[in-house]
Image (tube, rainbow, N blue to C red; front, side, top):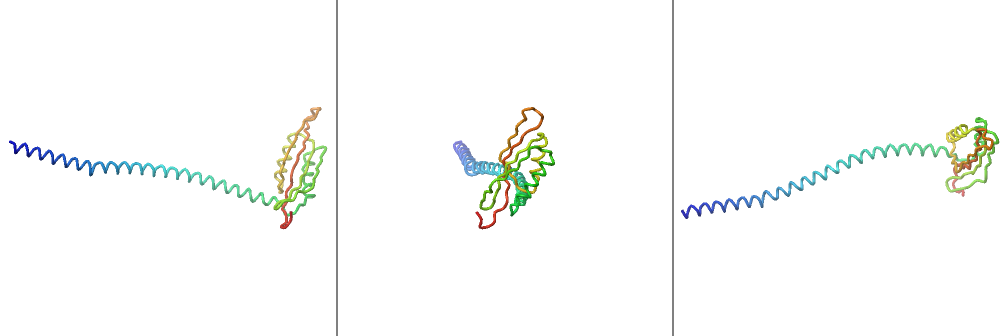
Length: 181
């Protein structure tokens, strides 16, 4: 019997060593590898999701860039190489007449020279209906010349006739010649 017990004990020890060896040298490394693979898969899924979101954002940015480039082209074409201030002020006066403004004043000041752009400050005053003034500014913006409106002051008539007095400080731009300024 002793031999049998020894044999069973040996079988149990060998089985324990085999199971222990399997757990230590095969099962635990595989569990660590599986955990690392799951983490890698999660990281790759996150990267793919971020890439997809960035791709959508990139297409929106491309669309915005194209829009800005079109606006920039329009902007540059609205800056003539010469002042031609008289012609442009005449167009502003025509717009004011078209809207039946009263007490019209268009007063250009001394030009300001810069490296790439020159500008001429112009003060404008008139009286008219508020809707007409807004339409005047919309049409002024549509002219083929860059005009920056620095300040606008609207004041109601004291007799409440429905007319609004408008005073505006604007700048009219044109390109500077190379070597100027």
